[in-house]
Length: 435
Ligand code: ADP
Ligand code: MG
Image 1 (cartoon, rainbow, N blue to C red):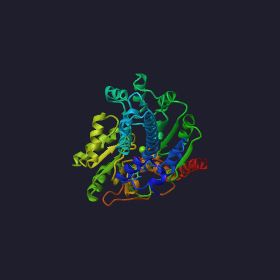
Image 2: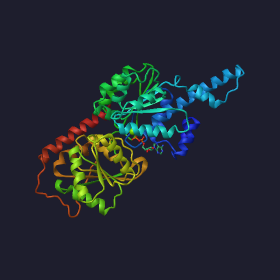
Image 3: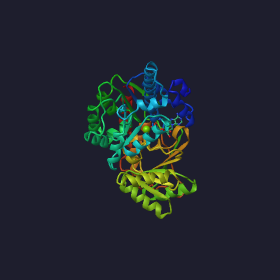
């Protein structure tokens, strides 16, 4: 299928070909026609499948089409009045700051994600006269307020800063036609429920609402009832499936040898770029220290760092000045780093969905990737749960020279616990698939 089959505005089609987006991804092909038909959508697809363009393209299409018809109207009126003005002058006539009202609002859970959505949007709408503002906290409100005062068509924002600016009456949402909640699962994880409801109160009842998420679980279904009207639910690749292009390896290694094994793998396999997941900020900092002492070019990415530092770290990582980034789940969520070949789990995450999100950072849009988990005996109960959740085995292997000390015992009595955990997880999965 090609993008032209989706009947998108010619300006978008030419941008897509300039960006070398030759064909829509599965989630784009399924959601774009439904959004263009004006329906509410609840879409679930794993990280890296192009969800951003799936909502940006139809919204941009509608805004461009609306602009075209307004210009045609002015041209008509002028022809009738026998005036001659150029059509480009009429574009600015349509878009005077008084005329520009916020027509689309995209909410994302973190600043990095807001930046990424704004970046994608800017790429897609280059050469158009559409304006998009990026609003997030941690920086001064002044510049954001003047940008809003100058008039924008689209707002990409984190909930806290948006509400702050709305309370200062820096903008109004009364003309919003499209409301997008991106990364809805993480929004709820991060406790943005009340903020979203607060934003909702300021939106027109008559609007189109689009919810995008890596996972669609019970919480999201129940929350969506407040937001969406007769929404079409679209899921690609099924639930809980890790990306097919990702090869998973699990090394059984003692906890105190993990850092050594990691450094060894980076050196022996000549990894260029690796994203390493750590459960806590403290663990992330400690690992960065250990790895730096071994000469690795590495930095941490977590919420305790200032916005400026986080941006610098990401730029350095993307630019190749850093080989390794040690991140927490919240900080790394949704970050788009293309060509990421390796993802490492220093421990298994407590939340099983996080495993899927983590390894979704590699093997993006069809490229091959490797997900390596350093597994120690303490994580045994989590591995059992994870295998049941993914409904597949993750065979463990030993790395020569780093064989685990088998005299250490698992924290649970395997026989009884293993069976019951598996059963619990399967029952949960079964209940989900029946819905
Ligand atoms: P998600 O939100 O699902 O995690 P993104 O929207 O961040 O995924 O997209 C992941 C990457 O894929 C981005 O770098 C984006 O530019 C790219 N991409 C999106 N759609 C296409 C497409 N149709 N063809 C090629 N690349 C695409
Ligand atoms: Mg996304």
